[in-house]
Amino acid sequence: MPQLLALIPVALLFLLAIMLIRTARFVRPPLSLPPLLLPECDADIAAEHLAEALRFPTITLTNQPPPKPDAFVAFQAWLEQCYPRVHAILERLHFGRDSRLYIWHGRQPDLAPVLFSAHVDVVPAEEGLASGWRYPPFEGVIAEGAVWGRGALDMKGPLIAIFEAIELLLREGYQPERTIYVALGEDEESGGQHGAAQIATWLAEQGIQPMAVLDEGGAVTEGVVHGIESPLALIGVAEKGFTVLHLKVIGEGGHAALPPRETAISSLARALTRLNDEPFPARLDHIRDLYGAAGSTASPTLQFLLANTWLFGSWLTHRLSQDPRTNALIRTTLTPTLIRGGIKENVLPPQAEAWLNARILPGESPFTVLEHVRRVVNDPNVQIEIVPGAAWAPSPISPSHTPAYKALHQVITSVYPQALVAPYLMVMASDARYYAQISPQVYRFTPYALTSTDLEGIHGINEHLSIENLGKMIQFYALLMRVWGQSRLENELGKAT
Image 1: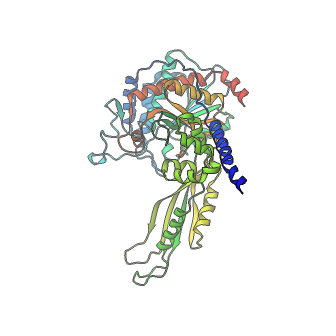
Image 2: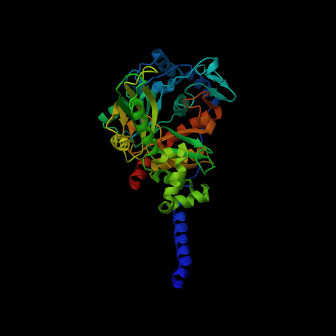
Image 3: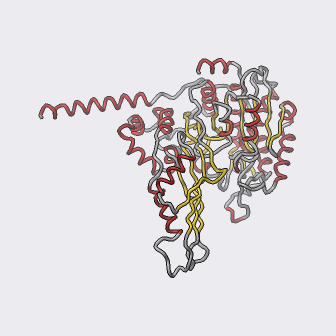
């Protein structure tokens, strides 16, 4: 027995050594790439253009026609007037009612093209003095060093930056070696069926498979990811799937003075409580990739814990589940967003219903979500179905080791030298999911630097984009078009795969 006790410290030291080795392997040094020369641009003129773009209320609503369809027509006409070189040189195809695909033909048409995606539609914004907006959301006001209005961030700001970049390159006489597509969807905010879905279908029918796609997604953030204080550029390499579940309970009806033991509402409430108490299982692979790429800038404690999830996985899962931002990265989430039941305060409810919004982790599907919900609820009185047309699978995971990703990384750090670059799982939906069907490399990154307060403006009040950010975005897109437009990237890609 004394001999065994004497071995315990040795075993512990050996275990600690293994854990430290795992930590050293887990934390890889950030990729260091030489900076590229940034093009010059006039951000003030671009800000004027963005302000004008925000004055078109191109609003879309789910399952409804746009409230102001003429705004889309006027916006397209304005684009033609504002960017004459783009519309004189690039080929243009029309899809849906107001979607466009611009084709900038390359000098080597046999090369796989690249595609930049944006959308012209915006979500509604409350107007008037009681709305809380510092400046009216559809007046495109330039003030305090920024452009204010609905869509400044999501996503007329990036759209205008893309067009400014192309116009800039055309003024220089530039023509890419590989063809560059620019897709403008009309209805991303309401599902993308008339815009990106139709464009992607047409590309597939033509046999066109883009080498790489860039759509909206992550940004350069600071203090948003727990344990990392340095500026962090998050590239979405995948996005969660989505479905809406409908739960329904049929009640007996009658007078509330003579209630049965169970009512439709109480049965539904119990089902929702069970689902809240038994969330989907967690997986740490996506968050490990994020922190691993962030390197030694992540807190040493987090590095140690994430490198040894075999021991600390349960504790880490508990801690990460407490923050909505990290909880969404480690599991499928299920959120009741709408509930309905009862017709009068003294009448037993004839039925009760709830709608649940599910955001699905890669590796799962709308059907596995349905199975989980039915198993947890475990009540034959609760009818559970997927809402027709409200389901899609998670996207494939795009690689983060190819020349196209490396080039994207290099352009980001050229524009934002202090930023680290890391892949991450995008928890919100975008048009990118349609292009993931035709391209193996779909990246979701919007090239602006945002604080946590700025992020609240997306779909919120006081949405605005700084003029400095707008200038950097133009430089980013112009530089990435040059780099992705090169033929040599094709050869490097072949070697990498």
